[in-house]
Length: 626
Image (cartoon, rainbow, N blue to C red; front, side):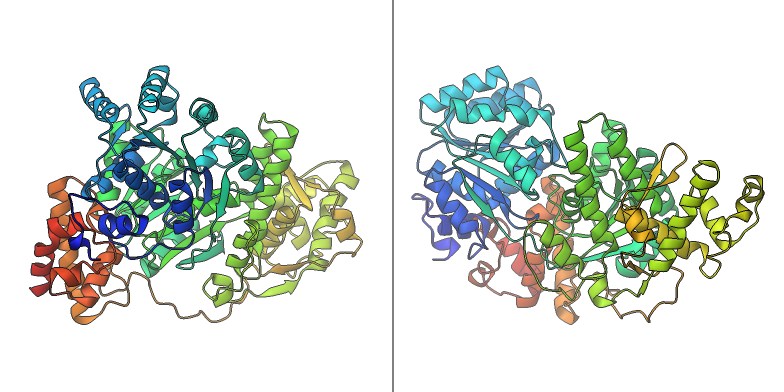
């Protein structure tokens, strides 16, 4: 049945009909159908699905169906104002009555929304966890429940409940009350990332022991993963953006607020349309920068991890990290914000010895208990293993989440296998150097001094401490300083060397003994200044002919795509919405390729629901005809 054939007086309640009528999609993907059916049957569920995998449809479709059956409002727990605003805007554009409640509302507006909720007219209400657990709001929920108008609870970003997760939020801990007070109302907890510890924590803290667990593939095949050794990070980043993503929207993550501002200013000075975002910025400026990122094309947001969760912008073509994340969950969550539309995107990271040392120090110096520190060290070790891997990045990444896969042929290691070398003897020399320092005067020294001794440099400091007399003096003159730094970085990453204290003095770990004895062979990546193989040719995802356009659009299709984007921008401004809420790039690209000539043909395009067909169909056909 076509979208236009549905009778508005008797709205469909089947999941497939709602998917087509409201959202314009002809079929569910992956496990969406099973999740929707389970929820419609009144069952609780825990859903793990990658960013861009369609999590929101898993609760939006049941919410619409249950509302049409007279079961009332769905309450969506959401942690961020930006997410609520965009989700509600998209639903209203699709003809679904939704609203959000947060601190941005006036008292009058909040009361109006509450009246809509209490009447049962709202299909979905988005609210933060602190509002959900508010006593007044709980009383309103109880009233809805008594009248049979409390349909479903959807807990988005559910990993926030876990102390083991990368984004713990204390307010989420109280959400167990939903099960205690409304045991007959189904609950759907959703997240994009969770390892075994986090999954167990979510089940325990949200009382989901009887819930069905749905785990989708974590693979994002449209994302290319590239991790490079840090040499001159700003220049490396600029080269990456200019060569691969000139004119594209992207996110650059930095660890500190100061570095965010400095990097954004520097990129802007280089002609990149870059803006800063971190929690310390004035709230007005922060909101203004976020709005520009969401509503304008080609903005590069330089941010701390305070930015991103719940950002639905689908046409982010790259995510870059100038600092090492804390763990694979955080890395996966952040990189997953690229390419949500399914088109090609890049995840690029540069890291060095200081990143490894800093992350280890933050764990060691945190006030957390020993068990927590032990688990966090294990998570960091897994990320370092990914960073130093010689084999497929995607295989490693998916393996962390318990998923088997084959080499992807698309990450940096698959496209250009790294040059490795047997560094066992070099590692033994470096470990011996550290040991000789301690043996000579029971003192500890940092990386620079150690490398000077190994390379035979008679600096004032070397002579002052008599280290030119050590047997390790000059035994590493055959390697450059960068090569020795690469060896040290990998020894620290592997846990054989520990950098301690304010000055990062080097200490041997227990595992170093086996390396010194020659019982362990160490095959390491060559340093950045070592001879490289010829570069593998690569096509920019953005394309030089038209920034932001899918690379497979050419000729008249490309012209149609650009015309549709211009039309979409005008509509978005009129409606005060981000452009992608009107239609995303993938939908525009399909229109541009197929060039439908009738409303019937246009209704067959993925993402064109009944409401949008009615609102925009004639205009789109006019743009395409022109």
